[in-house]
Image 1: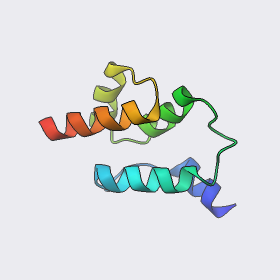
Image 2: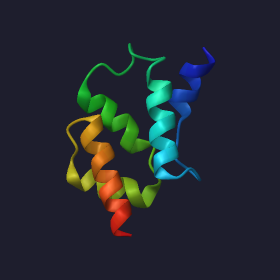
Image 3: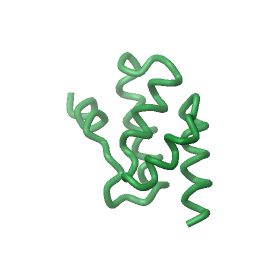
Image 4: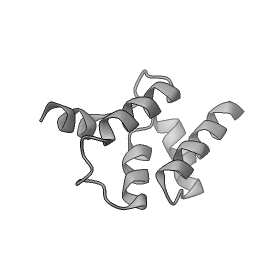
Length: 79
């Protein structure tokens, strides 16, 4: 399925953080069977972030997707 592959390949790259969050949440709906726990969802989201943002979010050890999103937003605001 095209949406599944797009989700698996999703990376922030040149997207703004908000664009990445929106795209992640949109595509996530098409793949509920892949990421069934909060920690796994957060991990997929964090792995797709740009390197500099990913490393900072990882040090905070988010427990779920909402926490990962909040941490990414806070870190980006501080830049």
